[in-house]
Structures are given as C-alpha cells and as structure tokens.
Image 1 (cartoon, each protein chain N blue to C red):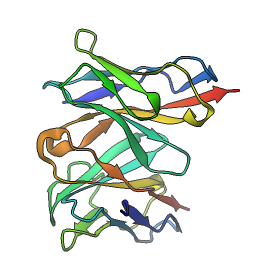
Image 2 (image 1 turned 180 degrees about the vertical axis):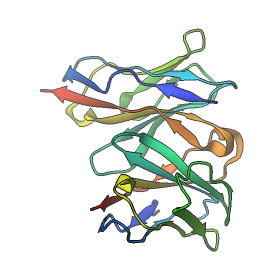
Image 3 (image 1 turned 45 degrees about the vertical axis):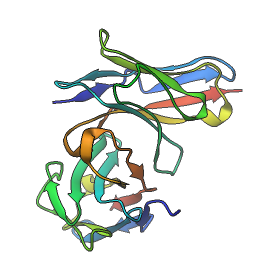
Image 4 (image 1 turned 60 degrees about the vertical axis):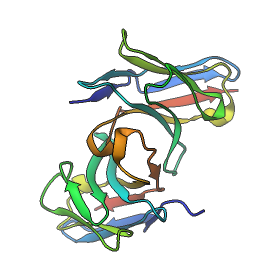
Length: 112
Length: 116
C-alpha cells in the first residue's frame, strides 16, 4: 500500500519569502512522487515529478523538490513566493497502472 | 493541442436522480482515470481505463457508480440514484500509456456535482 501525508491544511507566506510545503510518503516499492497544483476552478497541473533519476527535481514556475529516502520525504520549495503562487498543492504517489494516491492538499496563501 | 475536457462543468440534481458525466481525453491517450474531489475525503481514485477496458475499478464507492469508455476515447461516469454524499468535483485525467508508473496524467477542469 502507498500513501502520502501532507501536514497542515494551510500555509501563509509573504511575497518574496521562502515557500516550503511538506510531503511524507509511505511505499512498499521504490516510490514515484508528484507535486500537482490546482488553481481555483481549474484542474490539476503537474509541477514536478520524481522518478529516481535525480533526488533534486526542478519543476515549473521556479519550484523544486528533494527526495530524501532516509526521511521518506519529498518537500516542495520555492525561494521567493509570488502572488500568483496562491493555490492548492497536492503531493501524490503513483501505484499500479499509474493511478495516483494523493495527500489531503495544502492551500498556499501569499501576502503582499 | 486541446487538453482534457469535461462536461457539464456544473451539475445540480435532486437526490435519487441519475447523472452522467462526460470526459474527452487528449487525442491518442490510451489511459483514462476518474477521480473524485470532496471536502471530507480529498482526492480519491475511482476507476482506470486502458483503451475500452477497465482493469481497475477498485475506487468506485458503490454499485450505483459505473463508467464506460467507447472507441478508446470518450468516457462517461454514471451515478444512479444520487445521494447527497455524492456531491463533489469529479476529475478526469488521461495519459499516453499506463506503463512504468511515471507517466504524467493531464487533468480536465472537472465537473462539480451538487445533489440537493
């Protein structure tokens, strides 16, 4: 069985501040991990994915995530938040037939 | 090119009625997934299609839920005798193929279902 845990439901940062969204996973096989973003009234858009090629993964919009096996973590970061980053962020792990198991999601707010 | 489209975007129905939700995947994508997004349960997998067959229906919550896919393209999710707990956003996603667990799934905008 596979699962992901996203602690907390809401993160608020100031514009220009570091963004850190946490994700921990549980998997009986080497995990393939994803971060998706969902803007209001839209579907999910892939930010980045880990497929075991490199532990530091760079994605779109300046986001990156580091896979740490020892910590079973895949935290998402961005050095400097923009107002346009305000959205809901989901961590997910891929299972059989590539079906995704998602975390509960974290809402990111960016203060001017 | 066109992305995944879903219709209707919003659906309001009365308890006990049947509803049909439609998904048009990206052309050429053989894998198609349905997920449900609700306040209490988050994002949940419902069903996976490879071509017209559904080898994984493990996420369908009850026998009131069914889905089909025709011509390896359009898929319809049907909910019979809707209940208030069926209220949610139903998301469809497609990908080129299911192999290897690494393929990106492209999501549609969803259908927001409200059962009164």
